[in-house]
Length: 314
Picture (cartoon, rainbow, N blue to C red):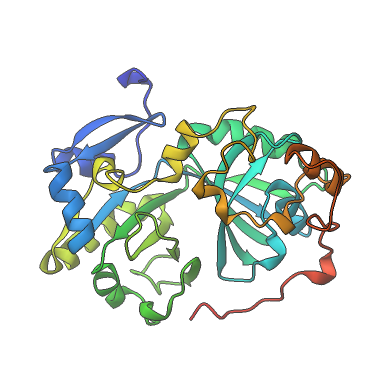
C-alpha cells in the first residue's frame, strides 16, 4: 500500500471525510472502504441503492478522423460493431496476446470515443496508447477533468429519473446517454451509462470534476427516501468481480488470453480479434495455440463496414 502522503484524492474526498468514511489506499488514491459497515452497504446495493465514488478510474478521449482506426487496432473486440451511444467491455493486448489492461470503450460519434481504464494503470496505459498510435489519433487524458459516480441497486433508476429527460427503463445494457446544456442537474455535460458496475441494476455517471460534489449531494438527498446509502469499495467488491480486481489479480505482462480463458474474457469475440494486425490470422492463431490461421480471424474491418450512427439506446 502506498504511503498516505503519496495518495491522490478524488474530487469527492472532502465529502468522504465529512461522512467519516474509513479510508485506505487503492489504485494510488485515498478511497472510502466503508461508511457504516460493509454488510450494510452491500445490502443497500442489493435491496435499494448505493452511491459509489469511483473517480479514481482513468478516462481517455480519442478523437479525430483516425479515432476509429486507433480503437480498432488497440482492443481485441470489434469496434466496428459499436454505434453512437453504445459501449463495450474489452482488453488491449500486446502482439503475443499478453494483456495490457481491460477497459470500457464508449462510442460518442464516429470520430469520438471515451476509453475508461483502471486507476493503477493510467500512466502505463497512456504510454502504451501513445506508443501504438501510428495513425495519429488525438489522445487526451481526461482523468483529472472527470468524476465518476456509480449509482447501483434496484432503485437506482427511480432515484436518477427526475434528473434525466428520457425514461431510464428504456436505456439498454451497455448503452449510454449524453446530456448537454443543463439537461442533467444543470451541468454543461454528463454521460449517463448502464454497464452493470456491481451486477445490480444501476448507472454510471461521468460528470465534470468541479460538479462532482453537487451531483453527490443531490443524489444522496433525492435517494434518502428510497434507502440510498453512500457505499465504499468494500460494499462494491463483496461478491462481484470488478474490472479493477481483475486488473490486479488476473493479468501479468506475459499472461495470454488463452491461459485459463476466465469467464470475464468471454466478452471477446474470437472472430473480431485483430489488434496490432499486420498479419491477423497468423498472429492470433499463434498465441491461441492453433497450428495455422483459419476462418476465425478475418481481415481487418474496413471503414466501409463500420456501423453508422444508430441512436437506438432508447
